[in-house]
Image 1 (cartoon, rainbow, N blue to C red):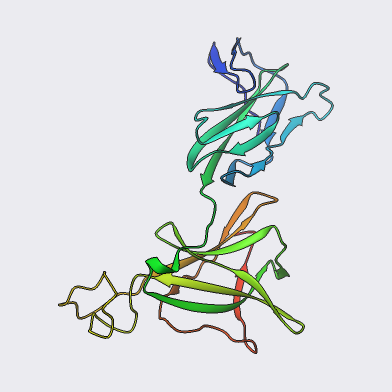
Image 2 (cartoon, rainbow, N blue to C red):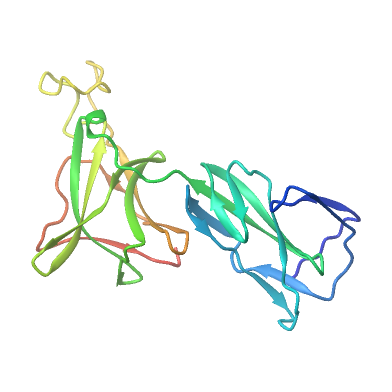
Length: 242
């Protein structure tokens, strides 16, 4: 996708040194596009956005990098760094040709195991996670999320020659029915509640190497039961095209 700046003057703040870059753009015979225009980054992770020039015979491919919110993401040299939760737009401008492209970046908090003492109930998924049919790598982790809150992180376990993931998911709600004297610790149940809707969990995979977030299309309702077994592991089939 070829982009040129059509306004007469654009003042951009450089992220490398804090100076101001003033330039007067003009119609350029050259083009530049990023290898990706959406980016998911975890706090503390670093990644790289690659500009692709046309024609590829351009000798000077130096880029000025800018972000409209340094508190969310910034640059260290040419590396994009996730600072804190939020979203921002990254802009890269070619030094010599003053052509540009943008990328929208989401930064999410680090996934951390929830404190079990905060949740009265849990359930376990004995899972076999894959992505595009291939086993996960050490850079990829899986989490169960409810309303954007991490309620469980998968951990690898080996039993003989079998390697599988244990995903323990925590919930505020008792899926087996309304409040009763048998469940006095549940703060979410009023005494007159007769029907409870279980919490619904989204299963996500984040790749720290490629800074890519994946999500299963199907959710899991909390029911307090174990899902899967060593002889029939619960499939978590992620696809890179989703």
